[in-house]
Amino acid sequence: MMHLLTSPEAWAALLTLTALEIVLGIDNVIFLSVIVSRIPEKQAHRARQIGLALALIFRIILLSLLVWLIGLTAPVFSFSGYGFSWRDLILIGGGLFLIAKATHEIHAEVEADDGEGDRESGGNAFFWVIVQIIIIDIVFSLDSIITAIGMAQDIEIMIAAVVIACLVMYISSGPVSRFVAEHPTTKMLALAFLVLIGVALVADGFQFHIPRGYIYFAIAFSAAVEFFNVLAKRNRRKVRKSSV
Image 1 (cartoon, helix red, strand yellow):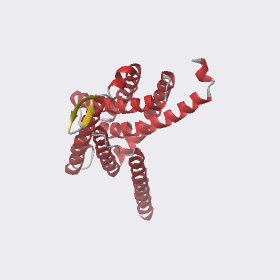
Image 2 (cartoon, one colour):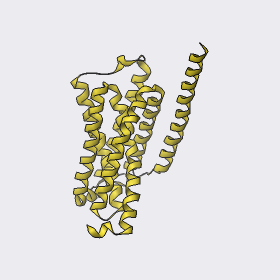
Image 3 (tube, rainbow, N blue to C red):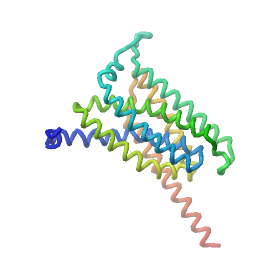
Image 4 (cartoon, one colour):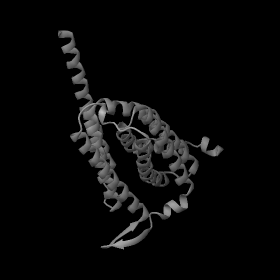
């Protein structure tokens, strides 16, 4: 352990892997922000805490099962000349779940009236939010940890990077969730991102890799445009108030 603290290579690996884990965690934060917007704020805060705690727990458990996890990439059956592993099947299932969930939420947003009346309440809604968070945490954790295994050799570095990334996710999830809840157009944009991410997961499961750089660039560009739209609306509102 001490040799890692004095090794420049270990610190470089930690910084690189932490940055990558934070980027991969963006998907998780977007999903959390959208899914908790359907329940009251007090329950939403608890759901975010539980969801991110589970994300950390799943990642650490998976790291502790390295040998088993690496075996997940071995083909378990073949179809039309393609070999599918458990990892592929989990990514396909998780991607389809994301696409279905985001499509359902988009339909609900289009059909529902504006306002707080469309928020679900009660223990049953909270329970199903947690169930959905657990499902998607498992999918994102699997992809995140397999990436960590490919980039670092020491489990201490992997765990440290995962813990730091989860802390960043926890700090950013609150502001992101509030921003999404306050701006309906931003929520629709986030749902479109989830469809895009779901398609990328399904493609990965079928061994057709879509470079994540393209997806994150599209997300960053669209988010920047939406930010300026929100800023323009706020300024127009101020001008109207001052002219009255």
